Image (cartoon, rainbow, N blue to C red):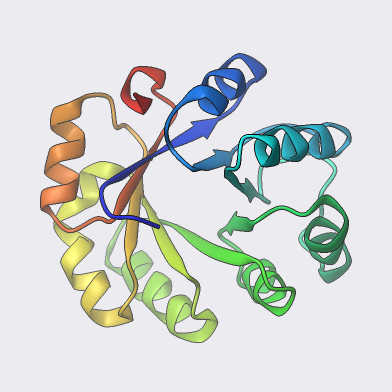
Length: 179
């Protein structure tokens, strides 16, 4: 992923159509159903973009190895986003990019995120909420991983502060920030 990237985080078809037309080469799919996935992935591939699927939020997908093998081999997604260790490990096993999502709520959650990242070795960490940006440096130092921030990113000023704090990218569902 290139630095200072704004990643469209898509929840609906209207946002999906807008994301397909945006200059970004990555889309995070945060909602949907299994029956819709092949058409969505095909549309993304036609415009030469990558799609990361949030396994914990798409209906009809389990976090087991068979589901992830199906997504990698048949549907041909590019990567997964998950809070679950097993999902991330299965994704890596099948050649998918893995983004570990973590919620910064207290010092224990930081410890858990770091411990999991050291075990799984995901490609990226996505940390939420975005106003936890003072912890970016600590987590980057402890894991050696690039950080994507998400949640409550509503202005260009929010994005600048996050990038200045060391994040490599932001994920946002705020369509106005995708351009």
